Length: 127
Image 1 (cartoon, rainbow, N blue to C red):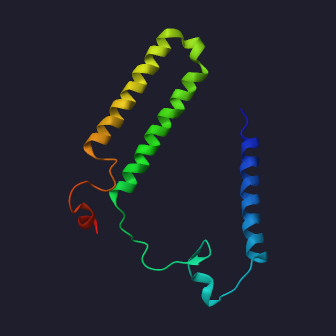
Image 2 (image 1 turned 90 degrees about the horizontal axis):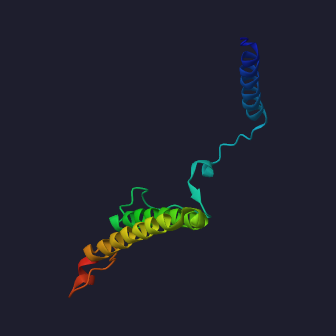
């Protein structure tokens, strides 16, 4: 088995990468203005620290979204192959949806989906 085609390919890749780096160095812009190193995002200068503490509720909602979104994809795929799966596939997807509903009911019951707890003076405790 010959290895020379792989060696030639590897050498050509290294040559192309070195050429791109050299050209970008030679043709690239160079400027040392004061605003070059300032963070700039979406047309707004950033203020404050990037170490902002967010509530864990944001992460919980994001995780719930990912979990339930993936389940929606699985149900959609089941719907595509529904005729081929027959009654066994239908009963399996009903069990799957039942588990999802039970998980949603549990999350609702433990208060994981409540942004503001109910009760007297709950709004003042948050602030």
